[in-house]
Length: 354
Image 1 (cartoon, helix red, strand yellow):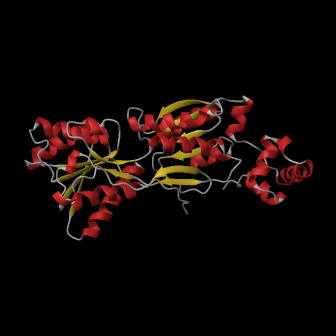
Image 2 (cartoon, rainbow, N blue to C red):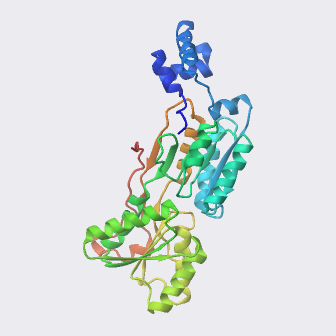
Image 3 (cartoon, one colour):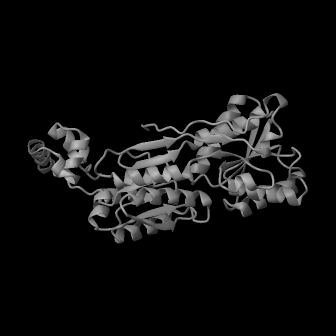
């Protein structure tokens, strides 16, 4: 295992000063008294600290680019995430380079290798579930990595994510609250962490009910075509739509609505439907979609902030909580006494992970 890199926090502790003071010695030395600066510089020499933060590189003009690897460039969720990263880079004049893994670990590895060879200031990765060791090694070699939309299980990699298990649980609890005892989840592969976590959360809600049943149907692709094809096959096999449907994302839900509309089964309370992401399209579908909102742009901004602080601040694991937004795809099925609320929500939160 590679030796842990000395951080600016280690320097601050050794010098007996605050983290901000140690950072000022590196970035704004004129603001620090000579005596204090000497203590920090002595600690730097003793510990062998090497500043490598991308914010310093960007300001110094060594490189002005940061990489972003996402699961699917065609998914608007990742466009919003990218906008957030760009927002965060604007403060230091940085630019963004993007690549897509398409959910494949080999494509992700090639993108990481290409970005590292270009000596970028750092990389934000919406990771495919699996081996994160290459990202940890890349960070230890001097190119910082921050995981986005993925909770880091590694103490050496900062991350920003939404609690997808809580999101899946919110979706299933909402459908259960409408009186549905049979639910179908249109889901992607469990090799994608978000799919696995949303399924786990939905299962947790159904298990707590004691009587409800949850069936998982895998989609071929996590887009409108995948949702359309899956519901078309379901109708052919069952002759009726699912009583209640939880879709792994809003694109899949849009495709499910297309299939139901062709069959003349969309609306009129035939199939309660919940999506995930709250994309711009969700409110504009033929039946406006109840969905689980996650703050993609805010996540991107926070990921950029963590990346720019790499080496100057300790590793941090940030987690937002999801939000249930109720629209017509389920609102028409809420008991009369509970109607009138457009949404129920949970505030985004930041929590340290073990």
